[in-house]
Image (tube, rainbow, N blue to C red; front, side):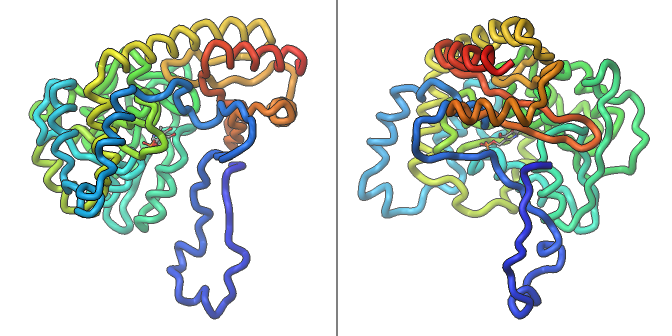
Length: 366
Ligand SMILES: Cc1ncc(COP(=O)(O)O)c(C=O)c1O
């Protein structure tokens, strides 16, 4: 992977105090986050539209002496109640997290013992492997099946303690349908987290499976984020949906106050404004669909996506050269090298005007 780091600077007299497996691991490196300058940022799948005006109002209201002085509600009940109405579940089916990465950490710690196994298809979200390493667990990759992006119909690998399935997947943007998700849980018979960071842009999700947990042979957990479809990547808020008995176990694992008062107020307002959410979601999906034939015409091969990004590589041009060319024009996309698969560009969907600018620059580059 291009996104990795090692610490060569740690002197041996300090290194001897650090866990050997931590010293030995590379660590996950998130996408680049320039904090200033005029950059068109299409590299980490943020939403090009701002959050609902109700979110800003809620943040202003939450930022008062009393709220900041006290600890927040450890369970985030205001959010749980609002989200339960949206998803047709009980508040006790929901666990709040400091971003969905926090939810994934909690799940790994809940289900995977030291020396256990975390499994995920390849290529997919790279954090799963890091979480396995942090837990002192093994990481097992399996291949997508069918035309390239289906789930396997036979399980030939070791028996994992947790399977992480990004659905829609990153970087492909492809989605596995709900029948295939249910079949997969029945096949593997181990806990499966459907990481639905991008499911709001897709036709299907696994929430129905959570509601039917009693019919399934192993736990199903859905992980969601407000970073993408709700425009709140800067706030850090995610949540899990699962059977309430599983949520109770996960509560034991989480930090007591894993979501702060301002984030909770913002997230509650965001999930409560479904009209705004639907309007920006529809715009992003329309822009995504319009972008595919345009990239096609420029000679890119694009995988049809159900997320707010597109994975593409060019028939003749090297992705690294294209990435550099875009960067020189102040456009940041994500260049990812997947060993034994391929390298390509993952491009987040911006506004129509931002995408037009991207296509203008790309036309010159190819
Ligand atoms: C598949 C997937 N899961 C989870 C996340 C994490 O999202 P959050 O911002 O909620 O931590 C991302 C972020 O890019 C992602 O791509």
